[in-house]
Length: 185
Image 1 (cartoon, rainbow, N blue to C red):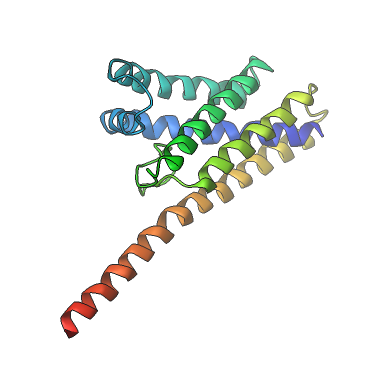
Image 2: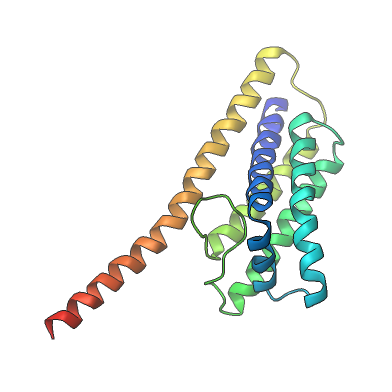
């Protein structure tokens, strides 16, 4: 069970570290993403946009290095749930078109219930990791935990890319079909 907890920590740490990296690279864009959620007063948008990437990087590093347990897991789970609630509120408002701000794909990722459920699932997985207090007992178990976490991260990234491409492909196909119909008339 300890290697499963390690795999979960590695998975979520890589999610947080890559998201933080994307936000650091596109900090000015990220401020617009935070503003687009329309959940914070305007005066808090810039501070939130500047604080979230370092917080994600700190939590990701703590999870990866096994530091601050169980607080790192609980903090990461809480942040994932905050993001899930923010996405859910905007979806309920009919604002699916805005970018989630996850920076988990090279493509814009519009809000969807899949993303909300992804964050809730990752948060619940961190709960499992918190319940497992001991580390892997030997080197083989540690390596297994690290590898499984890395593989799960690759699978999640692949799904993120697929979730970004499919809506864009559908829009493109729909637009091409409409253009074709206009040309024929």
